[in-house]
Structures are given as structure tokens and as C-alpha cells.
Image (cartoon, rainbow, N blue to C red):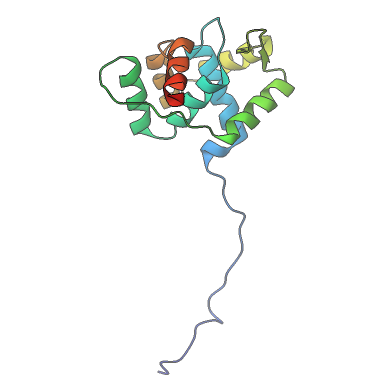
Length: 156
């Protein structure tokens, strides 16, 4: 057998579209944001910073545990506030589709159609199971006051 033989005639490369990771998909982010508004923001609303903090920590099991420990004051770990540009795009889309609205105080809340969407997500027991559990555990413990304290500690 010829050791310089190249199998180029037998190897076929088909280009395929790149798969978008689920946490970058707009449909996932919208559903996730609705869950956050419904389970972790309460009636007062939710700041963009809070939305960023929760969504970004949900990319990692370790970060979810870290955030829960932080709000429950069971450790002395610090929280890193990271911003994900896809969260801003999600909010823009949700505003345009009237899923959320911005209150006079700058916080966001679900509209009536947003609440209906949230309720439909909650009805499906097989949908976003881990996310629902995490957000129920987090509940309203991550307050805007705590978010502002985290942001002010960043500014020194």
C-alpha cells in the first residue's frame, strides 16, 4: 500500500449551519426572563441589572449555587455582575412585543400578555424544570437594594 495515499476522494465535507447554543437563543431568553419576572421579581418589578445577574449566573450550575448562597448569606463569596448583550436584545424584543413594560421608576414588569405567557410556561411541568426550581429557590431574595449594594461596591 502506498503510504502517501490521500483519502480525499473518500472524505466528504458537508457544510452545516452552526448550531446556536440554547442559552443564546431568543426564545429561551424570553421564556427565562418571563420566569424571572414571575418568580423572582415580585410586584415591584425588575431592573436590567438584576435580570443580567440572574440570567448570566444561570449559565453555570456553580454560579447558581453561588448566587443562592450569597442571597441566603451562607458564605462570604462575592458576586460578579456580568452583562450579556443578548439580555439587552431580549429586553428590547420583549418591549416591542409588549411582553414587558418599563415603569416610571425604571424597573420592568410583565404586561397582561406577559403574565399569560408566564402562566403557560408554569403549567408545563416538563418545561424549564431546573430553571423553575432555581428561581423558586431564589424567590425574591435578590432585592434591588442588594443589587444596588453590589453595584456600588464595584464603583469603590
